[in-house]
Length: 212
Image (tube, rainbow, N blue to C red; front, side, top):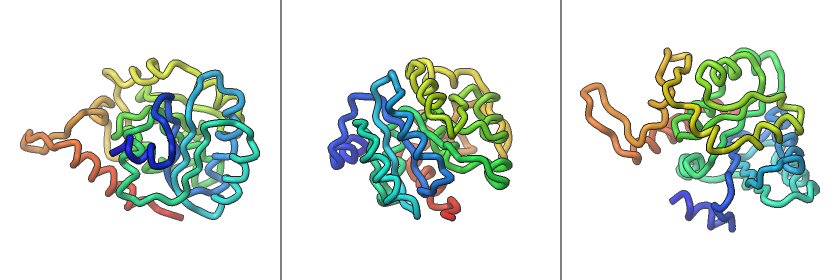
């Protein structure tokens, strides 16, 4: 299903995919992600999925960047978002500093983790805490394209291994990070749940997000 969605947009899964999914606003820092593409030494795909007041301007920024493999898809069905997550190699959340952003953790970083996708996030206190304590990705200055490019340039295989035997502190408690990455889940009684159910959980999280 994930590969079918990529093919629909003429995207070949032959390079690492850097994904942003969510509302598209200027404060989300996506303009700096696109600008960072020209500094990236690693050949990769930037995939932006979502809609919002900044979407048309962001499409123009992508077009004017003269860089390849930048896809601003706009709105996609919620049912498809878990598959975009599962098709990706890095999940980004480059929120720019504000009072609200400083003291919260967007749901999407846990959606990425649930899909076995390491993080590239802003150096805001709460997100930085999740990444550093869980050793589950990288922290960047969200308005510094060269810093973003440098972190993306780190070996994808390295970023994929950081979850082993690490713990992450969340609003819901402390968890073994690799539990986010399991091929299946278990109920309280120990019964395994299929990856289809994992996708449903991702979908429910996404639908519950504050869209403002």
